[in-house]
Image 1 (cartoon, rainbow, N blue to C red):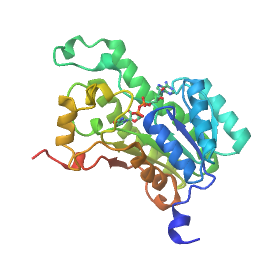
Image 2: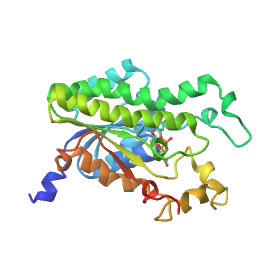
Image 3: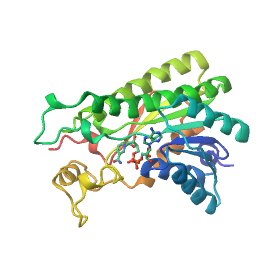
Length: 274
Ligand SMILES: NC(=O)c1ccc[n+]([C@@H]2O[C@H](COP(=O)([O-])OP(=O)(O)OC[C@H]3O[C@@H](n4cnc5c(N)ncnc54)[C@H](O)[C@@H]3O)[C@@H](O)[C@H]2O)c1
């Protein structure tokens, strides 16, 4: 096998993707399966998880639907047990479940001072706790194996201030910090085989942000226009464009890399806007 094929191989790597019932997690699950990984589709909606797994099976991939809520450790333990009994190990974890909570967003006519506490707690829980708990449950298996790669999903909101999304931004910034913290902890305590990195996607059209970025007729909203103006490549990302980075971070090609956050953003984070 040539260098590129072997270094970037994810063949038969058991890969858990939380939130793979959604747009970005789904694209990464499909992409890793196309590259030969055995993927585990974790999402709260059983039927949706099964649909995604069947779609992967239909194109010749290997997938298992394992319904689970990332905020419930006991459900994650069940997922872990099923995966270990069927496939015997866990090589890659992609923490893609997450997203914004509209009530933790400050619209132009609203005030930060009135933001309801439960909304802030909810968005912190979904994104931060929803990354920490799967990292505990599946990361423990990696620590025992002495090998594994955790890939968290951050956001541009963690490093560049985006108006309105106060709770989401705080939660994603905490994910960047947690990525570095766990990377250090894992390498020092469990060896260099256990790595933790993150991907910070720029702007992709998803279920949650479609109405924020596009009008009914698919033209750009004002916020959509601002984003495109600040993205040097002048377009939104396609979900498949995350796959290459996920394969790189999940494979031996990145074996000396831990604790980084990789922007996949068409240049958004590099650009001052001028
Ligand atoms: N779309 C973007 O432009 C963008 C940009 C940056 C970061 N992100 C992040 O990427 C990730 C995926 O986003 P997306 O656009 O694909 O969103 P999405 O809504 O399409 O997918 C998220 C999935 O997570 C699932 N989910 C929600 N709560 C869950 C829970 N408690 N347990 C298990 N599953 C749960 C949802 O059912 C959904 O299928 C999120 O973390 C999001 O914050 C998205």
